[in-house]
Image 1 (cartoon, helix red, strand yellow):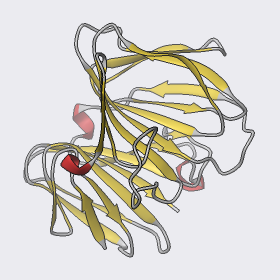
Image 2 (cartoon, helix red, strand yellow; image 1 turned 45 degrees about the vertical axis):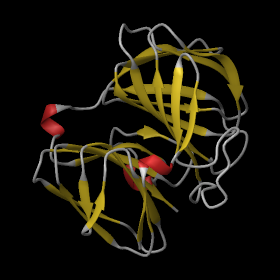
Image 3 (cartoon, one colour; image 1 turned 90 degrees about the vertical axis):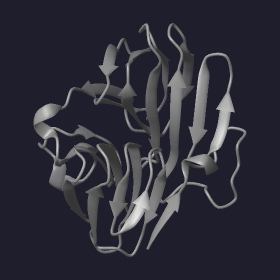
Image 4 (cartoon, helix red, strand yellow; image 1 turned 180 degrees about the horizontal axis):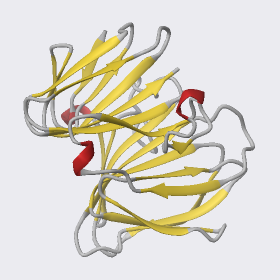
Amino acid sequence: MINVIPFDSLGQFQNDWLAARYHFSFANHHHPDRNGFGPLLVWNDDAIQPGTGFPRHGHRDMEIITYVREGAITHEDHLGNQGRTVAGDIQVMSAGKGILHAEFNRESEVTRIFQIWIMPDAAGHSPRWETRAFPKGEAAGRLVTLASGREADKGSGALWINQDAALIGGTLPEGATAAYDIESGRRAYLVVAKGRLRVNGVEVGERDGATIEGVDRIEIVAAADAEVLIADLP
């Protein structure tokens, strides 16, 4: 079953520097039917104004993936990690036993990101942070595993997370097709970062989400130039 969650139905928050949409219940926004999807607890669609960002704060026992859609995000944490992640790339922060970090838009343009929080497989992992650049033009038209905790993805170049889950991304020119197999007993959450898709014949619009359950294969057709992310979940 594929259930589309329209962008216009997402929770909202806005102040002078942040405009956010929430796919699931988050902070002061509560939706009785959207309290995560398996170990996927948070999928926030954030727009951060230039020269602003999230000041230093703490997390623990959470796998936090940041996918940059436009602009760039600059990270720093109490472990001494510093780095800048640009559009099309991701960073992974395993909060583990505890980490203090800040995320800022140091660019001259608005930065747009997806913040994706996944429950780890256990409490108390060592905290860590990584970022990685992924192929752009040459990867167009196919799906690439960006982050994963699945044994099959070790050594693939995907950033490691402490959960039997994966984040897959791809850009599809208009008319292009792609397929993704979902193992028996697993589910997926799909978000269209840009453009429009047909997923097993179901229309999914720009910045919509879709829960996918009881389906062993999804056939994706780009109705316009599109960018898609898929969380493969237990």
